[in-house]
Image 1 (cartoon, rainbow, N blue to C red):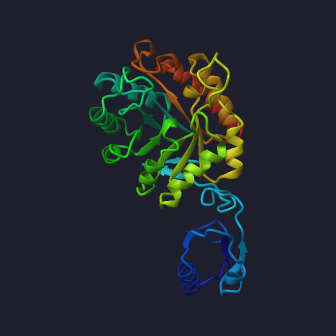
Image 2: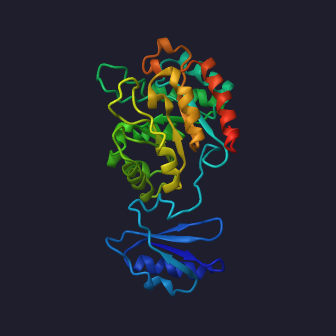
Image 3: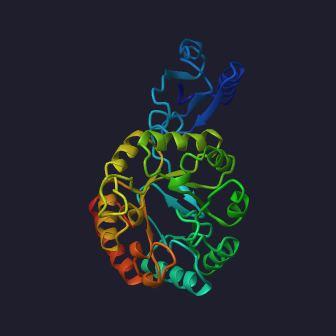
Length: 337
């Protein structure tokens, strides 16, 4: 349920409304808006009676929220949410570009990648330190040393860091370094991890599971926001289908559907979406045209030498070409890079 407050509501009136909600064993969530403030209610096990709040001083209207993902729904908050990561806004008019290698491999590699993507116009640096891999024999990342190297590159370039957290055991360590915590596709429904990042205020990049529906993605985001962390960014990264020519099938439908149903920012991961280097640029352009708020792209100084995902990584020169095309598509849809 959503309580819309009158524009002239007083602070004591609003406090009285929140106190009444709490007295009913429910949780009030204050939602500032462009035109007016609202108070959302969660914690109810069934339908609430609007009449108990409708006649309170300062209340303009009471609206039932039909979606099960209440806090992240556009019914709950009509205005777009902009998540700011170390000064970089995600959502809004500007397209945000995150770029860097799948894995941090060495001091030379990550510094070269950071300088390269900065030069090409990226706003954030991506890089994996803890790498959950399908095979236990594949490169698992440099772990804390990788985090330390990412922090070095941030100090040199000014680029905020996005890196994956794979479990609750290493969350505290990763959160010491990361500006944006990435929840990977395999962990989208790791509910203990979702709750743990929800207890932080560090922004979270939540990737769609490879077989997850959009509703399941939004419910996963609800876990995080319901714990008190509103700084969630949704990521479409491709889903598993019968197609074998690409690594995954990039679901372009997901972008307008998510934007229609949720106020959270949505970014696209064309690298994992197709897994084929030559298709990464075209899919990135399509995602921006469809309404994505940004892209996250794998870039490696020498993709042929990459310890993971080399086949879908761009080199710095290729990434620069994609950035130029992204700027033109963004301009065509009334946005900028």
